[in-house]
Amino acid sequence: MKLWGGRFRKEENKLMEDFNSSLHVDQRLYAEDIKGSVAHVNMLAHSGLLTRQEGEEIVKGLLAILEEIEAGTLEIGGNYEDIHSFVEAKLTERIGATAKKLHTARSRNDQVAVDIRLYAKNKAHEVMQSIEELQASLEAKARENNVIMPGYTHLQRAQVVTFQHHLMAYYQMLRRDKLRIANAIEIMNESPLGCGALAGTTHRIDREMTAKALGFAKPVDNFLDGVSDRDYLLELMSGFSILMMHLSRLSEELILWSSQEFRFVQIDDAYSTGSSIMPQKKNPDAAELIRGKTGRVYGSLTSLLTTMKGLPLAYNKDMQEDKEAFFNALDTVLSCLAIMSNMIATMKVNHEQMKKAVKAGFLNATEVADYLVSKGVAFRDAHSIVGAIVIYCEDHQKAIEELTLEELQQISPYIGDDLYAFIDYENILNKGIKVGLLR
Ligand code: ARG
Image 1: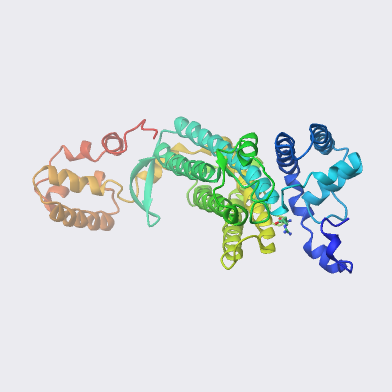
Image 2 (image 1 turned 120 degrees about the horizontal axis):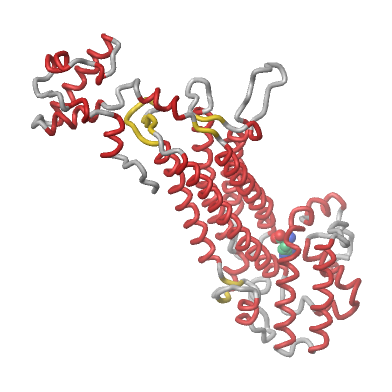
């Protein structure tokens, strides 16, 4: 049953067999494995390495296997080393001796490399699409909620912004995340099929033909590199890690904003859970899980970086570990994007609470300094004058705009009646973060 049994005098140890098997992980590559084999066989027939009839027989057998797996009539499983062994064994069961010619001029090393590239490329497009869906959710929520809110630095109230502008900051992060993934796709778009185990093959194969049939821009330029390169998984996982960092920051804000201390947003019941003991609790579990799962994506990236760092060229079995790490990161990113998108779409925004929060914390203090500058005061001096105004306000428990002109002029004679309009929160917004500025 082993693809390589001929050279061995003894059976593989059972523990070793389980240890070595990757079928439970790489079974999800079945479609890519079969498509890669079909392209390979068509090329072999075209190059005269198989007869046309042999080629057709193998392709028909492979496509039947694909159909059966997809229909659920053929279950992937059993005592096979990996998905490549499984497919070849099933092909042999179906078409007999001709199946033994499938692996002509190919190694599992270039086979697995082409499978995972095809899979990663396809899934990277799916991630980009999910990012776009989240961007659309954010943009829609931003449009509906072009309202004033406190902006923060050091989590201390700083200056006024709009909820729209705040949400659209995440839109921009996601735009860059998408570019990073698109860039990884462009770089990985070369076919390793035909590199063989590491040194190509003496058969006259046509790598251009298989590359084209599988949708790659070209075949790779170097055989050793082709079978030992996993950069594209690392690049995608780096992109995923940065993306998750963004989702985690957004989650953190949603968690804060939905607390009684902020009450800026209300996360929908559908994306919250309760407590088994405290009947009143509604917890932002979805956001917490996204924040938590970010660690798992970083972990997957670190895991594969570490796996690869000491490997001599070309293929080493260590590299079989690439799939579990990549699949884990990928699945996590896709589910987090979908959950975040729905959570944003269904969340309620508390305009009144945000407006109320704007009024405390001297969010117009910087604009008082700007006003003084417009009256000819040097900015550093203006900064210091406003510092004195803030101390006065704290002592008298008032906002700056609540001080009388007399009180203000006692601190600085440069202040006139026109200050009040200048430091009106909505007016500040119109001059700074333009109301209606979506991007
Ligand atoms: N299951 C292996 C992997 O995922 C396939 C390649 C095996 N090649 C080998 N020479 N043993 O990496």
